[in-house]
Length: 84
Image (cartoon, rainbow, N blue to C red):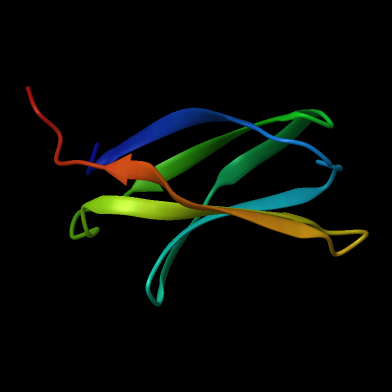
């Protein structure tokens, strides 16, 4: 996955447009682009995983911009080295 841009679907509850999606590991944060709130329970976005990104499990954070509500799923996304 490193060196790739992937389209993700995130499920949960309470999503409102507009929203921000970020992946966090320690003090490092990767922000999604093209975030689309499809419904209160589904978001799609594009995540670019650049070279040098630390592998392992990352937290997923969703923030609703207007009502300032947010939620975090701890260690739910695993970034691995790309394989052929």
